Structures are given as C-alpha cells and as structure tokens.
Image (tube, rainbow, N blue to C red; front, side, top):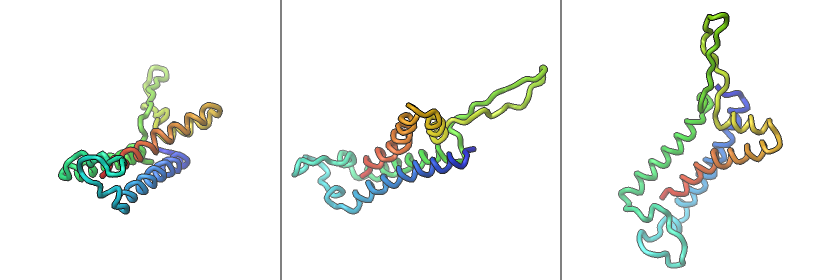
Length: 146
C-alpha cells in the first residue's frame, strides 16, 4: 500500500485536478454563452465551439457521462489502496524458496516522491509527472464535456 506521504500527494494532485475540472464544468454550466451556442455553423463572434457541438444531443450527454466515468477511473487507478504496478522478487535460500517479496510499487505518487528525492533534474521530472500524468488528463477530459 501507499505511505502517508504518497496518500497525501495523491489526494493533493487529484484534488487540484478535480478542482480545476469542477471550475471548467461549472463555467460551462453557469455561463449560457458557452453552454448554449448554436449546434451547427460558425460562431457569430468567431469564437470556438465545444467539441460536443459537433455531435447530436442524443450522443452529447452519454459521451459526457463516459468522460466523467473515465475521470473516476483515473482516481481509482491511483487510489491509496492500489499500487500502479508491483515489482515482486522470488528468493531461494539454500535451495528453499521463500514466499514472493513485494520489492516496491510503482504508481503516480511513489514516482513523484522518488524523483523528488533524487534532487536536481528529479524536481523537474516530478513536476512534469504531477502536471502531465496527474492534473492534465482530468482537465483535458473535462474541457471536452458539453
């Protein structure tokens, strides 16, 4: 399982990701200018249409629901009770095999912490992991809603 620091990091990263996503979704819902654009054609002021405006309304909400479910799967994949991947070792002592040992787990929080602890370029790599593997996927999916 995750250590306390990994759990805190996971909660912080996904808290930021879903906070930004909530702002994006809330902005779409609260501002009729962005949410109630014409379904076809060009915008009167030259602005961009949301991706969903290119699909029939009968597909818009089911696709949006699938995107939200995908966001929840991101959370589940990095939940404190799961490791992204586990490296296990099988050891034999004097010919007698020992039970498999869990050497270390690989997941978003543990990767960020391990790179951060290396210092130097590790700080940059940690920041890139947080932004592009933690926050950006959720924000990107939320911007495609509606």
